[in-house]
Length: 398
Ligand SMILES: *Cc1c(COP(=O)(O)O)cnc(C)c1O
Image (tube, rainbow, N blue to C red; front, side):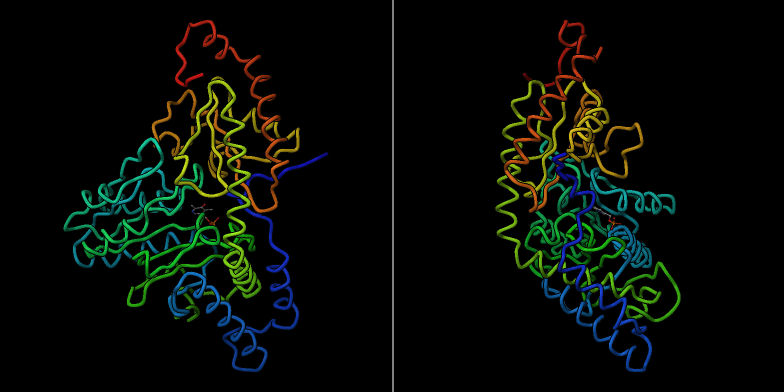
């Protein structure tokens, strides 16, 4: 059967380059980077090289990079660090948005229980927030602004540089969850005015379970894990060198081919958006222009996203409905609710997230599969019958 993997926002396939960079770390370079003997020093050198490579890809210095177990840990550490510094000065207010990843939202919830006040900015219907909203929300007691670079569900790309400028002007630290952007969009931490920026290797064809936190020099980090003096004493535990080396290789590769990949991927995205838009009563989620090259997200009226996914799986199309973290729960996606999609259609969402392996022919196959499946499901749906018989009003246009 012809199969198409279109769930790259959930995770990507590891690249050959990344895999090849990892293998020697399981065999030759197996030493502990903290050991003083030769095998240890060989590992320490490989670790340093990976740190330099990762830093160079985002315009940072090697000492500004802390390796973590992934995007979630990096987000947690950035937010907790800013909160601990803030509370020392009596500043316990944080500004963020309603459509952040749960790694951010749940960390903010924990702080709220400790007495922090959290302002979650409303997201416009197009999936964007404005620098002006951030400026208006900042108060004298604000200790952090946290806004994601690109949304993992609807792919919208925020005006990060402008938000960074607002934060710098107000002297408030700025954290950016850039997990969906790193390796896909050009990033220069100096230009963006970020104090903290987080990334995860498995979103850019690196291995799972590894990521990094960029923290601008001078920023004080709070440990989430206590123990040895690894990562300048800020993240204990023997470094996962194979994963770190794989991440560095994957990121270098992604940055080297960024423009050509983006061009290829966005052509497939545009074909999909155009083709799927022809299905009656569906709506594109997220701004048409300010979106990741590989993100397509639609709501279809009168169907359940889960049924759509299962039938697409039967046709060899591997996609997602909402985020991987929320699938399995019956609540509609908090992101779709944040952009004002009513419950009725927030349940009928489909996210296709592409990589450079996807082709225009894949797009044509997916469009046909989606058309067939949506009309099959609508044919069996009592909700759809009520809508077409006029017993309930449509919330989308034909
Ligand atoms: C995947 C993702 C994360 C979590 O990264 P992990 O490495 O899986 O922990 C955080 N934020 C965003 C936007 C993501 O897409």
